[in-house]
Image (cartoon, one colour):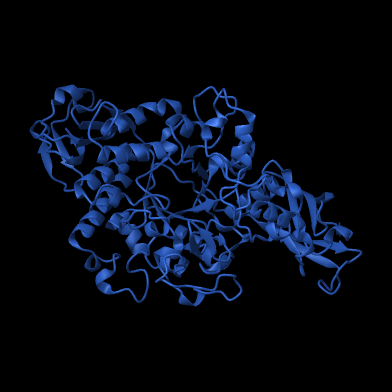
Length: 629
């Protein structure tokens, strides 16, 4: 009954939602775009019944106007020639339907000049030379308590004692810790979504939860004011770029929150996928490449709603697709972001995703896009990116979040050594890189905001954590660390994700100095050892050509000993890990393809130099060495 009511609510709510001003999306645009086409969505009470015309503007042509099922919407297609100059377009309304709401007959639309820094100091792309720090803004640091509660929003609570509430973290809080990021060796910040989430608290897993994580969009063209709003985000991105850092924005094309303005007043029936009500999908990505898959199972994946309060967008509707693609382009140009991480990638229409990626690449050649696909196999992970497989549909994303390498590293840390277990999972997973066009573009990680924290996964075993850190920062790909992992934050999910999304200690003015993990004084010995370990390894990696862009050679693990090399013409780095239960003195003749000509090694953490032949590796020891002549 709930599903039927909600779908009916979407289809009938046009009668209940009044618009007393023009909503124009995108809010503005730029001249000089490679694609001359622009589609404006105008949202206002009875706007479809108005006669709208554009006053003459050199280089800009009004191609057509489209009325849809809901009279509160009008779509206007423009053609912006390369000769067009920045300025304001003027539109005339000849038969105003709601003069009490808009007491004028002309509205303006601005065309701006594009940034001349794209690809230089902004929109630079994120590559295997970078080190990503993933954080949840609400949980990281509160730099401006005045925006903790916004009276105009539906959820007007901020309570750090409630793990399901908002806690007040914001852009200013993040900017307060540049020194911390620099010391850690981070080059790129990835924030969970920053778009407006004007949602009431919502039931999840039996809990009343706020949208603190950011995945419940209610307005694409507004940054959440609790983080700092549009101007605060612009300042945030500009400050990062001025300090030589990059920013990744989290995209969600699959769904929106059920209080988004176009859910409350849908433009048309086909704006959302409603063939299955609000039932969930089957979550089986295999249906897209399985040669035996049924069309019914594919439709279930595309049309299913991730959860009932997140209406599923129909990206096969060209108006929906235009809205989402233009927003991605608008955001990239407006804020200068360097990369996109696309949430729930495998639930999106495949052709839409290719079109979106291609449109972004056309305007921003250096921009990075990688998708999030929590999948069951390396084949599945490779399917959604550029690959070497023969499949009916070919994806064009350059890289993905590499869950298979994540699971392999966790197995290497935790599982006993066996034919297909322990570090052999890393070996076998990397051997399947043959499927990818460029595995260096994949983002690798040990944990994130949807997973148990890795320090708890390894039962707080520091030796196992060192193995993980060594692999994370030396294997091929773009390494990402989840906030707090560097100071051994811990916890597992218990009927909620909130337990793995706790506040970073020291990020709030009332946190005690002795608990401030941003400082050496606020970390205990083990936490500080972990921070220093990652800092030294990450800063070594930053200047290592072998680790950031070199080739990989791995050897079949023997009795728990796993050895691999990253190398180029300038440098050879060797990673040695003993996951067995006996001391091992490797036979270096076995590894002569890479060790020939080297007689010594330098421990990149301690700086100590030792003879290669004298190395003996104890159980659970892991080292990163630079080979020396």
